[in-house]
Length: 310
Image: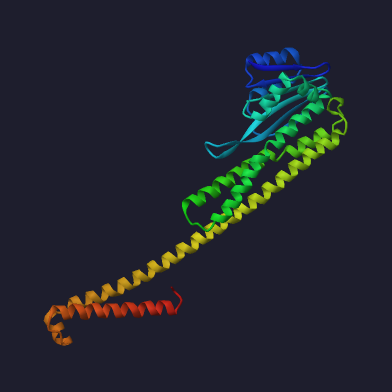
């Protein structure tokens, strides 16, 4: 049971990491939440949601986390229960930013008073602001990768294509994570519940909405850039393949013609051939045939180039 309870006079913050049956029992004993919410808490979610009840809100939000070992972005889930005098956060402990915040608020009086001195809505906003801003380095990393991809788009190798595909996948995952954030934040900003209200609460939540919109716009631009790089890389690869096929076709034609002529020479008896051509030695015959084949090859190459086939 990894549960921390942080108290002030008017507000209680309960943080639970990787909830188990004991944590679930604690929630059921101390809070009257909808049974479906308890199920959502114990089951990993793939989408963002917000449910409003008479005396509390239940919120599921996903945030991006970057896993260096696999160079990929994965969603990290944080569940929120917010009511009249409490805020509950439930997560898997993957985000160090949230872990550090809980630790500091729990250990230091001055930090605790700065976060828990107003309504639960203010504490919720403060946590969301930190979680949103912690995503900025991940977005910056994606932007740098997009710039690097633009520089290597003309390198026609499998590694370039793999990097573009990997980057495109991360952008898609990030966009899926961010897709519903604006909707949830809008619901919080315009809610009439007293526990979500604090001084200029609409303005503060609106700033998070703008941040989410800006992030979405940046990701949309990055997605378009990567798709453009991918199309360019594939077009260049196709052009390169066509050039190779043209060369192979020319070589195939020349070899076929030369082989045909060589087969024709074979049909003639050697004595008749030497008599007809006025050749008296094997060396002269070899030089004659080789020269003829070389001249014929040169003529065919000239004709191919003249007709812009090469």
